[in-house]
Length: 317
Image 1 (tube, helix red, strand yellow):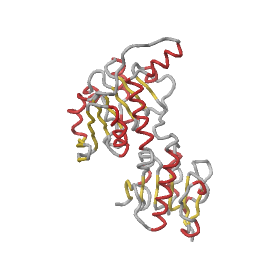
Image 2 (cartoon, helix red, strand yellow):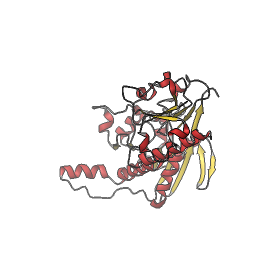
Image 3 (cartoon, helix red, strand yellow):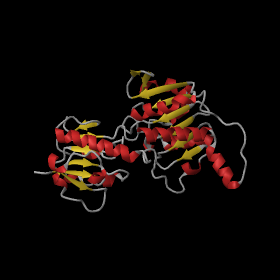
Image 4 (tube, helix red, strand yellow):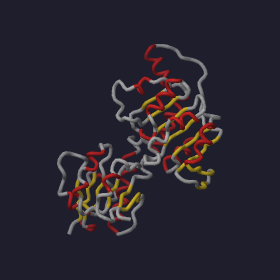
């Protein structure tokens, strides 16, 4: 009997997938379209389409009565997690840890450098034929605080290494030691924030981190500090951030916002000292080859009955 595997890519486009005949798989292509490729009840391994809204991502799940693995192509799982609890016990939810590290870390560094060195002002100056010379802040000699020191946070620090930062501090859910130095728990943020020239957010969206960057967090940031968000929009309290931006006390570079997409007329578009990119941290040319390698590896393990990588939770446990 064949096992259905739903993929958001055509199977022949993914090198290294288990042979369908040998693994007794039937590969079904579904990228969030209105029609399902087959009966969802026959799906055992569901790969969630990438860059689709939450409603689309979870639409087949309620009918997937035989599903054993739900594999996202995102590092965050907040768009599917609420529906996972309703599935049968033993379903494994896996994220895409490792797929977006390079791309998202690259954008975090890009936003940091662009904001510090005045690139938005230069772009506007070119449009207006105005020459904005002068001195601008450098990343060299700055103190950087990474909030959310997982795979992406570590990749951000990799890219900071050549820029002669004065120091890099690391924060995660709980304390631990790394080769680069200590990772502080979230409880240490109040004492770390006042020393940071740049605060980079790369934390997942959880009940703990939702609204983490509120009025108190922002007030503890030093005057002139830069907030860079490549995590999720709701990690930051937009109203509180706007108040700080409009006062001119801090600046921000945001790849994610709350709400998102940022609607026309929203005050964040024109707040002083803010650079906005449209949630493109993971959607670069680096995504596709890494996503396909992950799926080939996960399905090879699944076919062989081996433990899967990146298991975030298992229902009923």
